[in-house]
Amino acid sequence: MTLLELEPRTLRAFDTLAPGTREALRHVYAPTADRFVRLNMITSLTGAAAGDDGTSESLTNRVDRLILGIIRELADVVVVGAQSVRAEGYIVPRRARLAIVTSSGDLTGHRLALAEGAASDQVIVICPADRADAIRSHPDAAGITVLPVPGTAPLSPRDVLTVLAEEGHRRVVCEGGPSLASQFAAAGVIDEYCLTVAPVLEPVSSPFLRLARDQRVATRVVGHLVDETGFTYLRLRPAG
Image: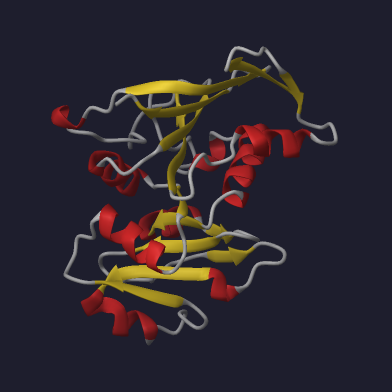
């Protein structure tokens, strides 16, 4: 499959099956600062975060998964909400750590799988300080690092990023779900939005971002790729 770069205006084409393409795309998606926060999400044309199976898996395609893998490789940590881990299951990345954000401390129903080469100690749980002991004693918490955030629920995105930075995790990619993604966007902590737009008109039960009227984010396009099936891969940064 071929990817065409529209922004920057190179009209450069990437053969996604060719040797060297992954490294070329790593250059395209390389973070531009030592401390860099990304939001990486997929959405339908109608703004749905999930397809007909109730997960993002029915929206994605091979190129989206390729780009997802590259963005993860370039991050120190992948941040997800506990609800998304329950709903979709999650594969612990080979390189980046996986940080699960939970305000309740409830790990019931979590489905985690390890990618080849990944280890269980690559999993972090971020929670309010008063839930930390309960999580550490959970039977599924063996090998998991618990990072307590001072105070009580709900957790602030800025506090989440602070505790991660204190552990040396400064290049962060948030993968949602919609609730956590909306909190990060509303808090103004995202340096770059990496959005895949699937060419599907999907009924919207849960929008990929839910923002109040006073939380509008003006952006500028810094990257724009399209593939031959109509999928669009955008990189947006706050316009300020």
